Length: 381
Ligand SMILES: [Zn+2]
Ligand SMILES: [Zn+2]
Image 1 (cartoon, helix red, strand yellow):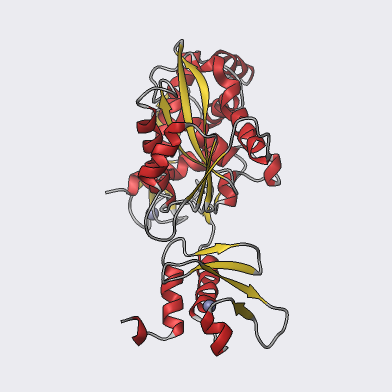
Image 2 (cartoon, protein in one colour; image 1 turned 180 degrees about the vertical axis):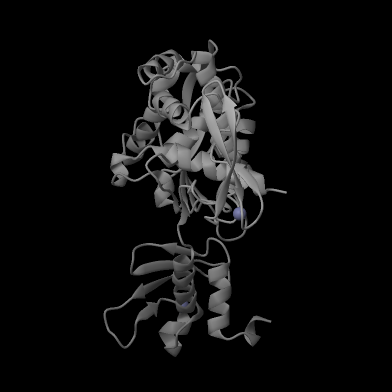
């Protein structure tokens, strides 16, 4: 069957299969041999006439443009096609459904804390309020999004409520918690359907948390290149017999979120990861995911990467006591904050999500995200 296809077609097939091409540098790629033995190196040469060279027999002896070179060319084209997903602020002067600007004011909805203008769209005939995403909320979008920014950047629930008083928002710390729960869920469901473009090297680690007075372990899976926090799982004890179950679930989620397996998995050598790796990532066929186990005393670059991540969550131990359940929306909120809101110095001031092709625009990213998520929810059948 394969013989009927020419090199170009076979190259295209390689490029479309997951995990066949590993980028070594801008000019060097490693392509997995389709016969299942080894890899070939495809490199861009400086000689104009040749362009690419490959270490496979086809290229070496026949001097033709082999399927590996075709595959690299196709994959580079595919990469270009993966445009960053940009989440734009929603223009409240246009219809939220059809973007028409011919709107008619359609009465005012009153509540204790202010008025909400209702509109009717002349173009599509639908009604909406400009309070998209914050309907039936007593407080302003600014107050609510400020609360989330304060809380996730390190304030306790009580301090967040106190700080809000300074800008005229009178709320209890319980209300702040309710806002966080509600909006983390709204944002999470929306973000779940956007796939991050993560690299082929992932890192797993766990950290100790205290939830409602009980010690717990948060297992986290991060992309090594973008530091995108791919998946999380909360477990009771990292040495218990259930630990491999939690680790397996972490890796399953990772595959779902990224739509692929990593080529390299780096862990700290915890036995649970090894078992979970065998279950979820190991395969007899190419490509085989490599498992690199770091011993704890090795203070390498990788550990620093995890430490930057720990800064997101670990400093929050105090606040974690107020968590109601293990699978708290608060942890999902940290994931959103880590991936989409907090610029990382080590990433040149960008967020992990931006490097993974998801960019949220606007001065208030929480607002942009909540409004887009709410709009998306309205359109869902
Ligand atoms: Zn080749
Ligand atoms: Zn309309």
